Image 1 (cartoon, rainbow over the protein chains, first blue to last red):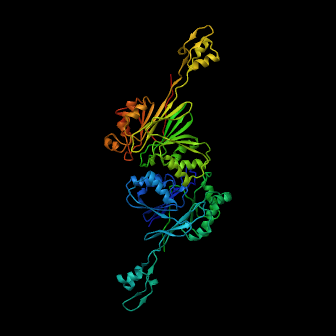
Image 2 (image 1 turned 90 degrees about the vertical axis):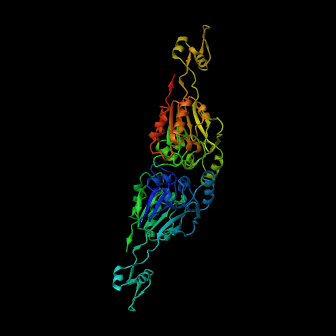
Image 3 (image 1 turned 60 degrees about the vertical axis):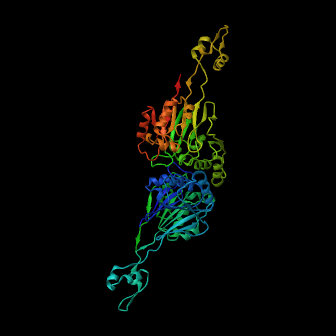
Length: 308
Length: 308
């Protein structure tokens, strides 16, 4: 039941000697999702030991080059590698046009289908779901249409307590019924309330990616109680005005988002190339929110299971 | 009088964990030229200590993604860095359309001009020259229109021998005249032939980049006597048929090009990702041509001055 986020890039638009442009890999129970695709992301995936062929879907927050220039080379490479499985890409309009252009000039004969899902950046919409996970869009406030992403596990089904099975001598039909949340009638006629028979094995976990954005109270409201929050912190706290005018956040904005959403942990990244000392940036976050961490490239942040 | 080539990428289309896609940096007397621009080239330039702002011109051999995907992110970064100086790009048609598309979606407000020079891949044309250097196109044989590049120093001007100046007591006008290659009349009426007064200080040096291509006798003829030859060797010698059908060369093709052009040194690259052991590939070249070397990434190959 792995749920982890590996940082593949935490630079802002201008890459530095040590940092790459935005990208993250989410591993949920062995399904891989990419968030944003800064230049060179395919090489960094290989470096963290994940074959890009394994990607299920790619989520692009907005159409600035530093979040998308790595996508097109990877699309080509997947073709060379003979991918057959469709690739789902969630990105704002006019991604479809850009993709058509790319295919016309560079990849006119891809052996797999790319399915573009338009990301409506003003809506909080369910984008993707499987049996155990949902991915939602989170509207953000940037210079161009931008949305973040909320990865949220579905509530776990009910488990039936072993001691209840023994005590009431439950059969398969009764266990199935209890798992569905129903009260169970015994042969004696006694009705045992569901709460006495079942428990929730674990609490659903969640991860939110909010970048690029000004501080947004609306976005914070949509990710309440998130276990791990990535929030951009392009600027130090003293650059509040610059951050605001450029559609970015400061360290204090990121920390405030963590505090007000009730996040358990905060990761910051998308640092301006002017900052060499990331420790100074995270120290500013910790003035407001102790559980703040640098989104270090190649580091894998696990979200632990919380058994109930 | 530096003349060097730094390898920034020597992979073929599919990048490997250790090799990047094609790109090379030519430094001629402190002027920087880029040949091809595989993904991530801007980071590799920074890694070899060259600010991409310093590039004078970029030469793109053909419009396959592995030779050009790094160009567009670098165009954006140069904008962010505030480049004002025009950037000259030599590339085949329809590069102009691709550039327009890129600008429309990603860089509508660049602070510098990009001047596209159409590279006619069937012609041996002078593309660029300054006071000391010429760059020529060299038609190649690939699956799409492709040209290589020949960097060739202009012949050095004549120097006047110190001992001749003393012996004949030459004045400024006479020295200038001798430098122009003229015979010089002395006050005594004696005429000294130019050959007795002057010498050529050094031999012009040259570098040729031939990739991607089948073996081409025509290309070889155009780079006769080159000091250093880069020739692609996508495949080992036993893959001759595959190489031919895909518009690529084998190690033996590359070595043959070196032998037949009379090159002094051969660099090979553009290796298929199937090959882990580059030493085995260069060993095949050395069966035919001893001065064969692997185009190791980040390695700088100097072309020494040859004083006469």
